[in-house]
Length: 353
Image 1 (tube, rainbow, N blue to C red):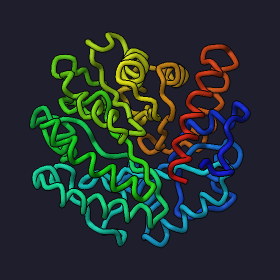
Image 2: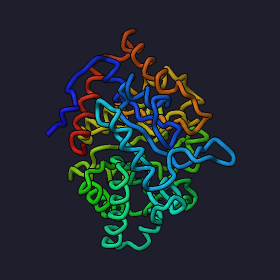
Image 3: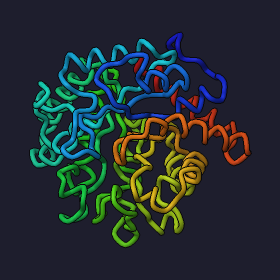
Image 4: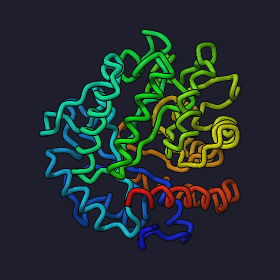
């Protein structure tokens, strides 16, 4: 049943706001915080929590100090929202963990370490620990699991221990368990990075990666099966160029990949979220206005703006919302396209709030 706070339609600005998942500074919330204004004035769809400021050296703490503090933070965020928020975190395990023992949280092994064990009971225990930790803290969206197939030992994501295996069946088996344990706690998961970047030798944070010669259609298999079984409700796109799928645009900007392949051919009707488009794979090649236009017209529902890959910009979220509204007003993005995303987002929120 949809919460009374979830409206089936609304003013354009409110609908566009729901398409933003924004990162912010602060471990406590007050009316002076920019995120307070983003929620109250722009109706943003959610926030993304980080433990550290990645652009600072040495990095300062951003949103995480202790389990008790994170719980208070998420409660305060939800209390000021008219529409329930996605409160998201990257909690894959291993190197991509925002909640770590340093702050009083359990230690989580990497996805690759889970794969080496190849024991579904141990995967279940790991997934239960992750989902319990998130639920206790008021986090309702985990930007995991990684569904990338490790194609070679030199791939960026493989070297970081973020791939569970090079075997699609093994990825499917353990990812299904991971998602199920989260769903039991009413926590959404986002499989990533569609359509597969397990062979990428370069990091999208630094440059656009063309994996046309190494990508294989078998990398779609975990997505196809998890869509078919109903496990996948959200999918994150990767910033990779695969010329057999689209000669011109990386996946996050590609209507051929998002709409034609993922939506139409593979039958996915859930929420599609972008990886952060501030990464240089996108931002070095497209203006911000062009990026937003291409993403939305391609079929992206939620734009992930962690605000943590370049020096922090207080106006990044409001300016992005206002740019999208201008694109609609100028006829470059249709209001129907915005409404489609809005409906998908609210439908997904109804499952977890």
